[in-house]
Length: 124
Image (cartoon, rainbow, N blue to C red; front, side, top):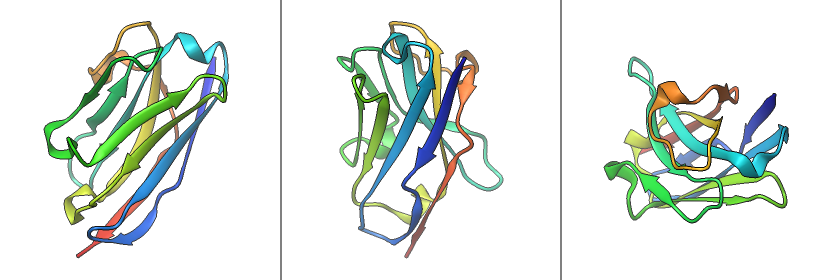
């Protein structure tokens, strides 16, 4: 079993930055593919960024490329999402997710461990 807890959300203005953290406990963290998803009101949950078990491979959805950076520290059992130049359309609940895999995964249905989410609100 793996437990995930997100932190770092909040209310910011457009153009500001936030850094989300996902703390992982349970089984060997380093063998898990990880990702950040987000869900805005009335919309489906979508992938934001993903990272493979070692951190050597990453994926970003087009709308956040160049603004967001995903990273992980396997020694500290934590994953981060650095979000710069935030826009009102980035407003959503952000979730971290994990799946036992050494390869990068982008499909939501493949992830079986989820955190409770953290709210990010960007005002214009």
